[in-house]
Length: 77
Image (cartoon, rainbow, N blue to C red):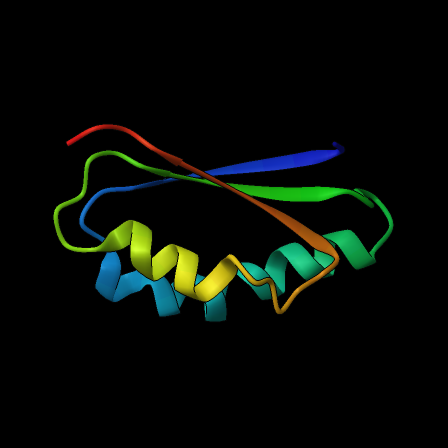
């Protein structure tokens, strides 16, 4: 992997749409520039109680961005 971005999340379910509109375009531009042809985004849910992991999976598990790799990790509550 050429570029890995780790996004820590704690009770951020309401902000997941922001990740899609703010972070994803930036990462896609980086990837498409050719500098980092393989990019992954690692979401780490640190024991959220508001459905953050479910929101992440709903937004990114079936990736609308096939050129990016998404990894999901969840720490126990």
